[in-house]
Length: 231
Image (cartoon, rainbow, N blue to C red; front, side, top):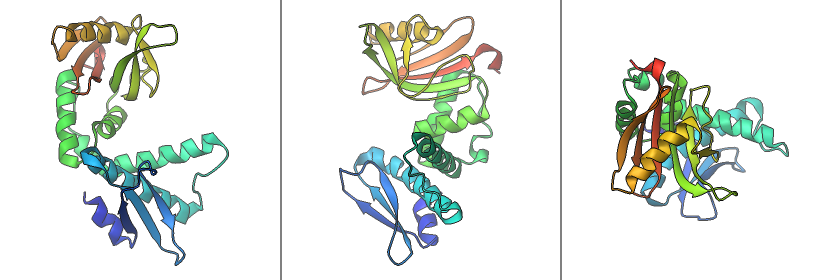
């Protein structure tokens, strides 16, 4: 999908800026009644992020035009709801149902490989693909995290982003995975093997089959499939 062409076809101006004070971008209603989306362009990662930002801000414009709702409120709950709706719109626009219809949880490794390929083809981040996959497939989870210590000085994995459809797992952004947890035991087994130069591994327990990879930045990528889901 050429999201830039789509936005411009709706007579919405897109302005690319190099403003480090802006996080990603925003939609602006101009004095002449037209709309403009400001997008921050910085680095290779931003190319993928910018596509999502344009789709996300387009959702904000639609919400305001239809319902006069911007999500700006003193209530954090309302703001988060609006952001979640716009994120869902952007994800579904950039990753339509037919694009993920053939994905199957044959194994965590195969699933992660397929997700990487699809992210490249569609021009989105792995996080966006993971969100859509967790909507379609039951009993799967994908996350990115890094090793750190908590307030009790225990080593944990801090989740950067995660998408999860396994009911018994807690894979939420900014959550911590402790070693005594089901996923933690698997992840820390992998991390310790990384100290002997292993950069990816398949590990399992009676409930989960998992594939972990160590990124070039030292983060950990994990794909998990609950055993009954394996096809």
